[in-house]
Length: 305
Image (tube, rainbow, N blue to C red; front, top):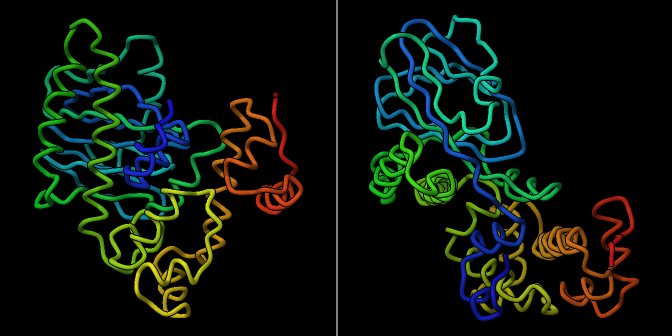
């Protein structure tokens, strides 16, 4: 999947990154449970959401106290194993095994359905997930009062119908709805999160750094300099650099190189030649590109072409 040049320039950086890194929906699943129960899930490199549509339960994550989540809550879990349970004290069973069979999208525990949940998410092409996952916290809860709360609620309703139904193409629709829910959950986090959060995703909401990131992602091959960015956003070079570091976590040109190399790795993995990839990400010298790639990943670039 690729965007045209004009579409790429006009889209927002978060959408660009998801497309460029091969983001794909994780199938929607449902859980209905009663009594005493607990299920653990692994920590694959993906963004996963858990939404409670009826009742309440506990969410257990490493290195943080148990979180009680209730009907209407949506939480985003980033690249970590987790447990959902009727009580934090219950030893969990392996939830992955219960959903392992093809088409096994609904699991029912107990004779009633005191608690109902939906899960889903977004995965990434091999080796490219860290650029997104490292810019988000391990856990975030969608604020019910956020501007996107209504979208989350309506998307959840549609996803619940697709997961529990047998309509034509329901699995595919559920997968795409899971992707939508991830995007609106991240959007809510960016809109309501504290300004002290560090990472390129949250920095998109900064009135100075955000426009610079949009310029950078809109034309990654351009020969950008810090004075060019600072002039575009109306700041001095030193003030802009410091603000960028404070919000993104690394200097502007370091971030640019990192994104170029992540993008290059994806292109090479898809079979594009080293020479063409170097030009696509702004390097007129293939040698300079190879040095930058090796500094970033500790190895020289390769391609199948």
